[in-house]
Image 1: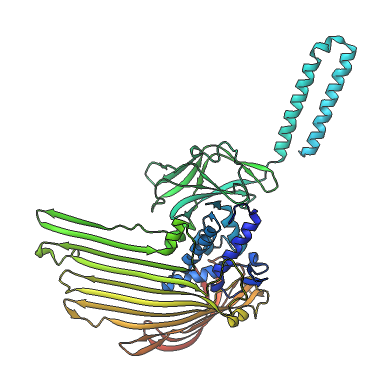
Image 2: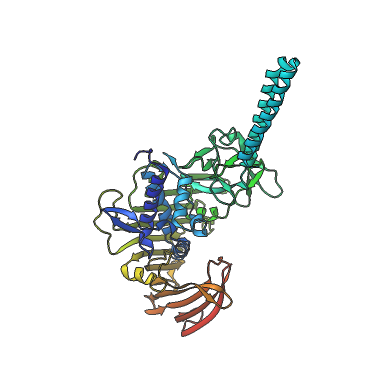
Length: 115
Length: 458
C-alpha cells in the first residue's frame, strides 16, 4: 500500500477495518457491498459503540473470554497491514472515551505513523 | 485586535509619519541626511507592531495537553494529545524547537514519603498523526507504572499548539498529571506478562531444595503485531506453566513449599466467515459470527502424590449475527444509532476434584453450563417521570446448569426490563423490573418472581 494516499483516504480504510472487525459482534449491519467491493455502511462513522463494548467486556469478565482483546488486536493488525503502526486503548473503548466508530478512526489516525 | 484592522492602522501610521518627514525634509534640508534612516526605523517598528498584533489576534482561546498511559507495541508508553477548547484537535509544528526533544520532557514517579524519581526516555518523542503532528509518543526506558505510585509528565519549555483554524496557543511548562483511568483496563485486558523459565538449586545446613519453573507461551496475534506480518482472522494463544518447589529433606515434606503445580490456559478465537480485505465480494453472508474455544486446567500435588487438587474447564462461546435479531434491534427504535450486541451463546464444562491424603472426598463436582444472552432496545430518549429523558432495554439471560453428579438441572433464567436516564453515567440510578426463575443460592429453592427496584453501579 503506498503511503501517498491522502489522510482522508487512509481514514476511510481505517473505518473499513473497524467495521470488519466489529461486524460479527454487533446487531447493526456495519458493512455493505457496493460495486463488488466491501464498504462501511452510510453513516458508519456516527454509529455509537460504547454500550456494546461495555456489554462485551462484562461477558469477557463473566466467561473468561478475550473478545475485547481480539477486537483491539485485530484492528491494530488491520492498520498494520495498511503500512501503519498506531495505538488503541481497550480502556478508552470501554469507558466511552471513543463513543462512535468515527472517534475510533480518529484515535487510530492521530496516533498513526508509517511503519 | 483584528489583524486586517491592525494592518490598516499601522500602514496608515507609517504613511502618515513618512509623509510628515518627507514634507518636513522638503522644507528643511537639515533632515536630509537622516531621512532614509528614519524611514527604515519607522518601517521596521511598523512591521514589528503589525506582527505582534497579528500574533495576538491568532491566539487560540484554550489549549492544553493531556498525557495518558497507552499500550503500544507490547509496552506501556505515554501518548500526548493536544487539546484546543476541550477538543483533541490540536497539532504541533515540526519546527517547534522543544516539542520533539527528549530534554523537554521528564516522567516523574511519585510516592508518598519518598523523593520524586525521574524515569528516562528511550530517545526523542515520536511524532504521530496522519494530518500533521497530532500526538507524540514518549517511550520510557523502563517498565511503568508501578502499583501505589503516581506519575506526572514534566514539560520544561512551553509548547505552541496550532488549532484547526490556524490560530495558536501556548501550553506553559509545568507538571501534567498522567491519566491512569483507562490504562487500568489495558493492563487487565492487553498487557503482556513476563515469561520466565528457571531452575534453582539451594543447599544449606538443613538440607536442600529444588525450585523449577517452566513457562511456554505461544501468542499468534501478539507475535504478528511484534513482527509486523500480515494478519489473519484467527487468534491462537497457549500458556502452560509448570512449577515445582521440593525439599530434599524428608522431615520437611509436609510443608506447603513442597508442591508441584501445572497450569494450562489455551484459547482459539476467530471470526467467521472470513471476509476478503481486497478483491471482489458478491454479497455479504446472511449469518456471521465470532467464536472462542478455551481450555483451562490446574493440577497441584505434593511430591508423594497423596494430596492433590485438580480443576479443568472447557468453554465455547459464540456471537451470532443474524437477520432476526438485527431486525429486532431496530424494530422498536427505528433509526437507532447504537450498534447493540449480537446474541451470545455459551456452553461450558467445569470439573473440580479434591483428593486429600490419598482418599477422594465428596467435594468434587462435574457440571455443564449453557447460556444465551441478548438485549433488546425498547425505548430511546422517551420522557419518563423522575428520570426525564430515558432509555429502556429488555435483557434476556436464559440458561441452566446441569450437575452430573447430582443429576440436577438448575434454571438460571432471568429477564430484566431496565429503564435508565438517557446518556447517564455508569454511577446514575436506573429502574429495574426483573422476572427471574430458577433456583437461587443460598437455599436452592425454586422461585418465580417479578422484582422491581433501583440500580446504581459504584
